[in-house]
Length: 306
Image (cartoon, rainbow, N blue to C red):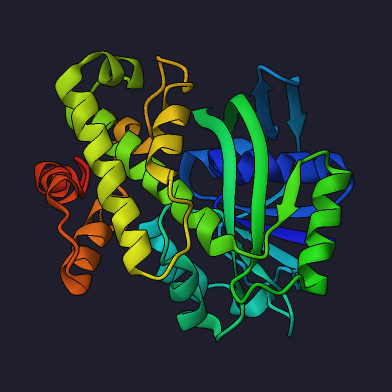
């Protein structure tokens, strides 16, 4: 398969490298120093699981002239969704899936708004990875993908992509209810991202501080209520299960939102707590904790350069 990775950061770069090593043809879209480093010396993956390796993908900034893609891994930050999706037209075949592996629960609708209904697939990337330096990705743990068609079908294109992941030794599950998986991740990430960003502390400190852990639970409860009001069928014990999982996260971890805040980068705040606040207003679901996080971080949303 020819797989285009739109956004070769920590998630796209990690999975793209695995696919390339397995023999798939991979084109990575990046920019700035990261793109320059990949072109100069390849993409280095430093994994605590698999060791260090270097791959040399085709690396581009623009898609003009790139051949048609059999699949797109769409891994840009949520605030770039609309612009990045609109850039894909030149590489799309009639049935090329655009698999979103992003934060948030409305990226798929935004992709389809740009490219036509049914183009996007929903996906959840369960991986802990960061860009350590331009051209270098540090993989800390995990590396699983849950994905599927938004209408619940197990399509031929989903099966082809699952087979490609299998060849790359990426555990991948085709879900008949990917919206549920998206919301389960969204609930967790709103809580982890919100508390680690607003406190500028790690998840370990959040858990050890009673008031902050109470805030964490409040975020989980609010976003779970939003899921129910949105028609997503979650188990009755969702709140308890997510809190139980949060206890297993290594204490030194921060969410990417918190890392971006500390490094002065633009924040995915609007897709996380902003979306939750707006959806709560529309559906009549109170979200005071989510709005408090949104309001507290709003002055930093554009990053230092913004």
